[in-house]
Image (cartoon, rainbow over all chains, first blue to last red):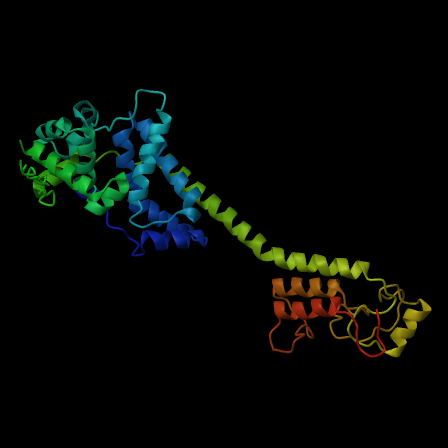
Length: 178
Length: 185
């Protein structure tokens, strides 16, 4: 099962945004199609429930539309979307007890039927291994393995050095092995 | 007493480039764990509607930005035309004697516009044939160019194309100061 469908438009994210800024709305639709699954997964990881996730998801794309003229992209758009979505959720929960990356055991249990439908075998063990990881390590694993980002892209998305990405990934995978 | 300096042992730097590989099976199961429900249609519609609305607004702003210099030039020219203290032509061209005598006798309104049914002089740039080249001619030509409905004689610069350059020619004629022999503001 592919979590990210192949992009139907061969143009780069930068080209699509430039084209959208010239007035071609279909270019934005192509951007949306390309990144919506990633953005939705990211929002669902941080949000407490589906409603909060979809609010953050919509707000992220709204900001993309509004900030497009000032956007300076040096990598894939997903590296811009990830911190934006995380910040949106954090802003909404600033007065609460702080942002926590969803993906722990209890959070993954909330995934419920969708997860069970997709892969009913051996998921419990994997959930537990993932749940054992600290938030920062789990975040790197998810971006690197699930979102298939390069180490450089993870570094940009999280705003941390590549070496830190590698060390977190190294420790996380070692922990998950045991 | 000679003291031997302590030997510094450089700290060991772990090599994290050696990241354990993730098996395809584990990777696939991880991805499956994070496969979730589709995005609700109303959320998608809201995003795309916003994108269309903002794109339309930006297109409108672009048109305004493009039109602003032309409007400013037209406004300036109109101001010059209104403020010009002359009972003669504001044109850089010589009127025919009949037209000039009409100015003197008052048969023409101040500013070179005709007061009555006098025969109109054929003046370059006088596209509305009112005996005067002014911003109305330029604006009329600009509107025709915009609508792509041109008339014979609109090609003021004789380049075979009726476009904004012809409007510029008429506008320049309308605001030019007569400096030739026998002229005077």
